[in-house]
Structure formats: structure tokens, C-alpha cells
Image 1 (cartoon, rainbow over the protein chains, first blue to last red):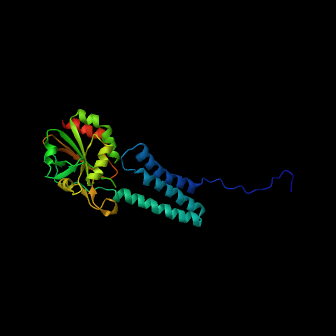
Image 2 (tube, each protein chain N blue to C red):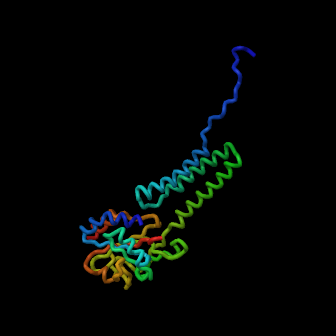
Image 3 (cartoon, chains in turn blue, green):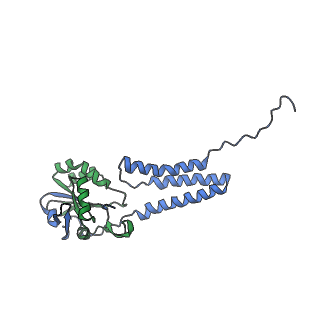
Length: 142
Length: 110
């Protein structure tokens, strides 16, 4: 061997760890949801959740396409399934039914009788007692 | 019940506008009492028999855990004579109109 010749050493390929980056995108969604609802207490649909998951799955798919591997393929299938469930939840399961009820603008509420927390009754008369009322229905204590 | 906390925080603004805030669900009276303790400036209404929920037709069939019925998140504004001035139902159960928006609607309808 010539003294000036350098031995040829195989350098490990320096590719972006696409699967890992994809998984981080995937995790960013739930973390964002936790921050939104627990810290910021902001009540809007977190559309970014399935969007980030989709980006994550796309990166994972690119990783599988480049490097293959059973573990990556199984991981991709799992994350793709979860991503699909997230889209289904937000697109369909979280939808509220369209309001087709009798309460329309300039009309009165139909008769009803419910209870205040202190046990006193609450009826349609309480909505017509001279004071404007915001009546908000919430989903109760689960 | 994040929305109740937000409404409670803004209760002074509603009071300033002479508006009472009533929050209703299909909870029983005992549960409503606990909710009332957390949100003392709201009027918490228990409607386990779905009388109010059916009158306003805001039931959301099978939407509670276990497949039971609950109330779809809907907000109505009544004038002092019991007439509906305005109402809104978000597209999704995770969406709510912020109290600031409700206050804006109140100001616009006066």
C-alpha cells in the first residue's frame, strides 16, 4: 500500500432519522391538546392533532420506504391506525347534531320544569322574569 | 366543565349587563349542588328528567359515556320576556363560544 493512500473506511450514512422525527410529530399532537385544555383552557376542536399525526405518519412511511424493516413497518401500521382513529373522532364522532328544535329567534320556550341546585324549581317563567338570561347547556358531570 | 369556569370568571360582566347566567345539564340535584359550589355566581339547573332538555330539544342521544343521552352544548339568549334572541350550537362537542363572544352578542342585541 502506498504511504499516501488512506484506508477506505465505510462511513455510517448520516440520514435524518425520519421515523423518530415522525414519532415526535405524532407525540406533539397529544402534548398540544394537553396544553390547550389544561393550561390554556381553550375550548376549540384541536384539528392540529390529526394533522400533526398525518405528518408524522408520512415521515414514518418515508423511513420505511427508504430503509424497510419489520419493526418500522409494524410501527407505521400502528401509528397509521391511531391517526385514522383521530380523524374519525374529530370528523364524525365529535360532531354535534344540527339544531332543529322548536326554540327559534323571537319565540318563547316550551313549558318545562327543572330544579335549581338548591331544590327550587326552574320553569319557563324564570326566563320571562324581566331579566335577560343566558341559558347554556353543558354535558354534565361524568 | 371548562366553559362554566370561564363563565364564572366573567360573571361581573354579565351582572353589569343585567343578565343572569343559567347552566343546565341532565345531572341530578345532588351533583348540581356540587357544581353550584364550584361556580357560585352561575345558576346551576339540574334536569335529570330531561324536561328542559326536551323542551329546548337539545338532547344528544347516546353521546355520554356508556351510550346514555346528554345535552348537546347549546347556548340560548333570552330577553326579559322569555323570547329567544339568539342561539348557537357549535359544530363539535369540543367547541365552545368564549364568554367574551357571548357578551358581544348581548351588547349587539340590546
